[in-house]
Structures are given as structure tokens and as C-alpha cells.
Length: 84
Image 1 (spheres, rainbow, N blue to C red):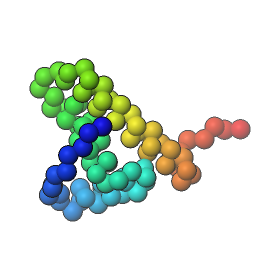
Image 2: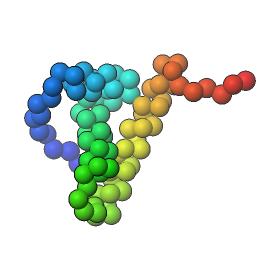
Image 3: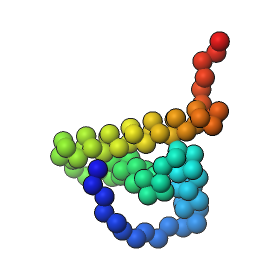
Image 4: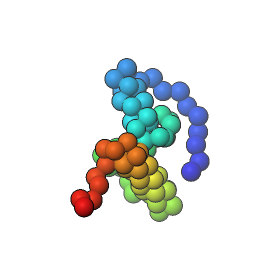
């Protein structure tokens, strides 16, 4: 996925939450913020349908982030484990 470097101003709570999510998932803070913005904006604010290539890329990025977060939870012992 192509990236562009930007500067954002975040309130301290948002930054703390992003850092905590990055620590839990093993992703960078930038990756966490990007994935969450994509998910939020595509879900709540998408005014028009995205071109198929961008929509597929956004969905794949969100799925990758979810898989990374689930793996991190499992590695930390917080994930769901099969009873046995």
C-alpha cells in the first residue's frame, strides 16, 4: 500500500490509545492510525463508492490489521483458546 507522510495533531487520549493498540498489535502507531481511519471513514463517512482497486486495498489493510491484532492477543495469552 502506498503511503504519504503527513503531520497530525492528536489529543493526548487519542495518542495514548493509538500507542497502546500499536503495542498490543505489534504494528506501528502510523499503521494503527491509518487502519482505524480507513475503517472509520469507509464505514461512517464514505460519500461515494470507492473505485474497486482502492476499496479492495482498504479492505485488505483492515483485515491485515485485524489478523495482526488477533495474533498479538493470542501471543499475550489473552486470545481465545480451544478448550481441551
